[in-house]
Image (cartoon, rainbow, N blue to C red; front, top):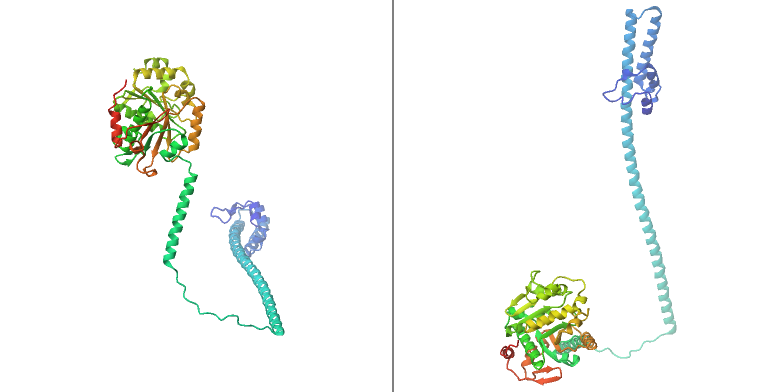
Length: 498
């Protein structure tokens, strides 16, 4: 019906803006044919009056003119009846909208009811399935019980028919109270714990192939241990600083470096040892730490000492002294003939009195080519001419071969080994590698040694009754001193060589 109203142009008839009088007579006739309008009782009554009024007008038109009073009254009656008829038609959509809304609400309630019933039906189906499963389990259990009863009856019947007899083999004894032997259990527990702990420690020690003591290093590596450096401390507290000789000259670690200085000079009294190179098998063994403090010990003795950082791939000396670009570095000298010609008159950092530092310098992309060139030979030659001692901190031997190019210019090559970390296989492989290239290490510096690895601190090894120093030809007896401080003092009293 609503579509029919729209088809004749009577849209939104229920709104306040509707104008029924705009309908033409043709449209009114069409609207009167719509079922919902035609079935409306008010419309039927008023439509009858409207048709009667129109009939009256047609009858009067035969005899009367349009301005005749009777004609005017008849036309007014037609218009009034038409207006009432159109208003009645306007009320029809309102009723339709009310019916539609009611039907929609009814449909929604019916849909919700269907959903609720469907949900309950699903729950009933689940319960029915559970009931069926329980009934099946009950049936199986009942059959199983019946089967067991039949077997029991069969066994009883068999026993009765065979006449089985039971005899008493032995009378039961009265049980006694069992109490744990606490002492025995404690002793067994202690022994077992000690045995397991000893076995664990023995197994770990067998698996650990690192070098942990001076005796072990000399026995396995067949090289003299020049110094056993303990874990660095400043004011009795462990520290990560590499400047132990400068910041804590009276510490046990500083005494170890004084012992290193004495042993190196004792080994090379008859031979030049002006250029000493420190390297290691792998990174993080403490070669930079050893180089810095050995150079500091030389400077404290009065030698004009130059510390050179030849690890151009990962220089560590410069950052330790916080050196910037204002100081010339090794890479700067190797890349510039002018700067190399002015060495050592260029800006070289003086860390302490008579300790000069030549750091790695700016980064270069091909350090191996520069280190193996002629510029490095000129640099070391100039250093020999202007300094009493030259200490070179070179790159590790394991990853790269830069150290071989520098080792040919050094008087001594010392291999730094980290205690408890570096394995003997790695160090032996590096020593063999050096031998194959014509270099023999002068000795070992056993670094970062724990005091509990042996009886007392290892730097006392050089002042004990077993004290001895080494030369390249073998062992050589050394006068026994009473304390490591006296070892350092003997080195301090030695005259400075220029």
